[in-house]
Each structure stands twice: as C-alpha cells, then as structure tokens.
Image (cartoon, rainbow, N blue to C red):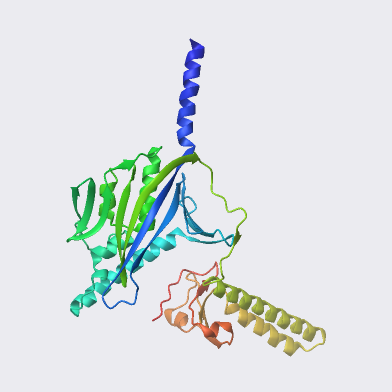
Length: 367
C-alpha cells in the first residue's frame, strides 16, 4: 500500500514538473500591410514572413528573417541578435517604456495644437496614440467598443477597428504562459490598455489576431496567424558564440571625454607638484609658494563643487557646505571660475553635472 502511494506521488510530481519545465514555441505567419496617409512619401504594400516566439519563464525570444530579439524581463534588458553576423546589441527595457511615455505626451500636446489651428491629423489623436504605445494618456477617458460576429471579436474606437481576435485558440501548457503571451504581444504590436483588460479573461493563443498600428506617415495592419505550437524543455537563452556589436554612443562617449579630462587634470597637478618640489630643493621658496597656491586654487575649485560643461566651455561653481556659518551675501559672493577649453566636446554641446560625495544636493537648470 505504501509503495502504491509513493508511486502515485512520484508520478504526480513528474507530471507537474513536466509542465513546469516546458515552454511553448509558437510559430506565426505574420502579414503586414502598409497603408500610407494622404500626401505621404511612404510606399504602400504588404509583406509576409514566418516568426517563431519562445515563451520562457522570465524571457521571450522572437526570431524572424535572420534576427533574434530577446526580451529579458528579469534583467530588464533587450538583446538584438544578428544570426548571420553572430553579433548582438543590448539596451534597456526601461528605455522602451520611457520613449513610449514621452512620445505619447508629445503627440497628445501636438494634437491639441493642431486642433487649435483646425488642422486634421488622425495619427496624433490621443486614443490612437494610446493604442500605438499601449499606454493611457493623463486626462483621457478613451472608450473602446467591442462586438462579436462570425467567431471573431472586434475592438473599435469611434468606428475605427483597432484589433480583431478569433474566438478559436490553442491552449497553452502552463497558466503563467498566458500572461507572458499578452506581454509579448503588447511589446511587439501595441494595443490599447482597455483592450488588454478585456483580453485578460481569455485563455490560449488566438488562431488569428489583427492589430492596427497607426503612425504619422502610414498605418500598418499586422495579422498574426498561428501555424503551430510545440512544447520544448525550458532552458535559459544563451548568447554563447555571439560577440557584442554595440557602437559607442552617448552618454558613453562624453563620459570617456570627462574621464580623459580628469586624467589630464591629475597630470597637470602632478607636474605642478614636481615643479614645487624642485623649487624648494633649489631654495626658490617664492616660486614654491606660488605653485602651492596654484594647487590649492585648483583643489578648491573642485571640492566640493558642481562641474558644468557646455561643449568647449567649462563652468565650475564653488558650493559652500550648509553647515558653515556664513551669511547669504558671503555665499553669493563665492568665486565662480569659468574656463574656456578647446577639444572634441566643442563639436557637440552637452550639459553634464558632476558633484563630489561631500556636496549637498543641487539642482541646476538651463534654458
């Protein structure tokens, strides 16, 4: 009897484990139709391709046309992989959300300006911008209508069809896979948050789903038709055999220049100290005192400090410690040192602020 129960428990654990350690691989036929707006330079047309989507526990991998895109939700990173060149680039998932949030605000404000000028621009309509970036705009109360007909549910806004989804679907092996699928679709195709609130009650991967992606120059109609679904052993994705191909870009390039400037300052200071020691050894005490004064001035200009750089102009501001018992007038009369420097930073105006660990927090704004 005991052996029978033990065998049953082992079988149950194996079944549960088998589900937990498998992940679905979805194969879609992706059809994208481009519909240019009036007076747009974008060419219309359509293209069709096959994509493979792997729903991992903490990541989603999408493969299409010799490329692989990895959304790592645990590390909050995006990896774009070139299968042909065996290279990959890396960026932040926060950057995607940040861009969508800022661009949504931009389009809502632009829509208000165009409305005031009585200029028609449907792509900047708040509801369509919300649908494109899959976010709600502040102060908007967009109402999405839905209707069901012929085994398909359609979601519309003021008569514009935003998304259609077939009632027929294939069930996913694990409960967590459903949320991961909607998550992938939201990153890939967008979709209004109100639509996803409705889709959340559905189970399985729809056999067919069509979503409108309205943009400034043209609308795109993306249709995903599920071709197959297989379950494979779950394993972490790997970038083994691929080399990083990220080109140096801002702010990394500017940080390199700042590091070089700091190293140059250290070398100049070391040279002044050497000259001071030589002057002292030869009995030229006035020269030694002058160089000591130069070192003191340089250090006072740096610590505590705020360092602002506008292209080739560098502004260092002496910031007094709040604990010092100085009058407001004395604080305002602290020395400001402005030095003009030539170098590679002159080609591109930039604004950076650096403070040392002993500085009080400062906020400096510029027009």
